[in-house]
Image (cartoon, rainbow, N blue to C red; front, side, top):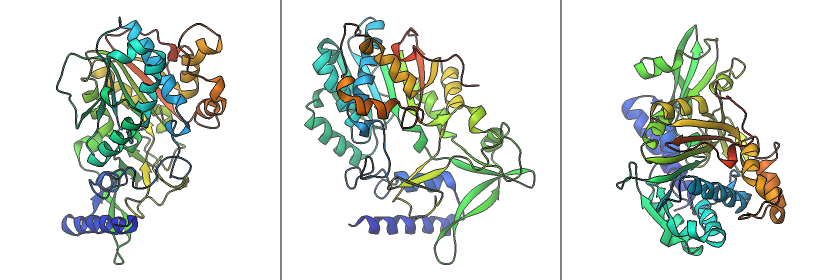
Length: 383
């Protein structure tokens, strides 16, 4: 089936639901557009390129294996700090085609074989299409023996010590869209006009969860923003995955004071197609990526309520520089090959590329705080 045919089918599914139940809340529209099990944007990894030069957007993983090697170097230090537990879990959610896991495990195998021998690498992935793409990647890298697949949280086996990793996952969680009109908060829904085109419509905000969430927002006429109410619940559940270890969230976003600043009158909701950013969010559902920045303050606070300690909030440039500091200073130890991959290093860390675009939230559970990646962290930042 052609991709355009899938797109038309998904649009019809959404229209049918609107006809049956009335205008659709945007988080439901976004859920279908991205995660419909057969027709959603993320439902068919490998069917068409989504990431990289020929896709819709760049990620740190698409720059090359250096990003995974740097994370592996940090994970090695975590293992050492925690007393070299066996096994050491690396749990990744939102692994897409599994390339990041391949880069992490390949480096561990070649540069830190005792660490590699105790790793249990878990994918949390509900999409069977993603399973197939990941199995293909890890098979090519010959690391299948280290990988386990789980469809959902919580994982069945405990206790666990290790690290939980999400890289560009939370920005794709479905969001609700709020708008201040006539001095009141209202919610933007999706409907279809007589021609079948999707359009916005405004509804009263009535549910208790939504009303509580907008209390913190600036009540400015015309102010529009999004609320990711799924992210704090996800963080609370994530905190149960490890009995001891670290929780690493890498994504693009802001602290709440910046996210909901009065000047940010149109929010952060956007879509990407062929590296072009567009505000035409409702067009061609399933054919383009839809995303919203992460409220890292809400994420950190949810983790803290669930028993995690926030160790640092830092941009990707400073995080990776901290991990790489020993290599630049010629300190003896496993190396990731920065000088041999200078172009990739520049892409990952330069403020005009990915260095300031992505932020890193690092939290811990019953684990020490002295990690290389936080050497250049500034105090605070989540206010």
